[in-house]
Length: 103
Image (tube, one colour):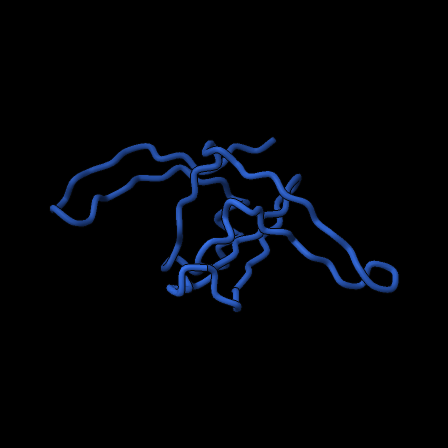
């Protein structure tokens, strides 16, 4: 398995924005497709929530990625999703706006 991005160094250049030095694989850099702004760093060592992918309809033509019950609070009805493929994994990045109605 290829190594993921690693933070090599953190410098405090001002009180707001630290400067990070990253070691990134060529495969991950290619997956950024030249977009070097609005990049989120996500730690894959955090406790994951397990979920299922469910298929419905004729020949499984509709596929649902289920959101675990613990994570459903304050979700809006619309979402953006990004799919990034690597040699041995597929990552889905999902962005959902908060619904401040409480449910």
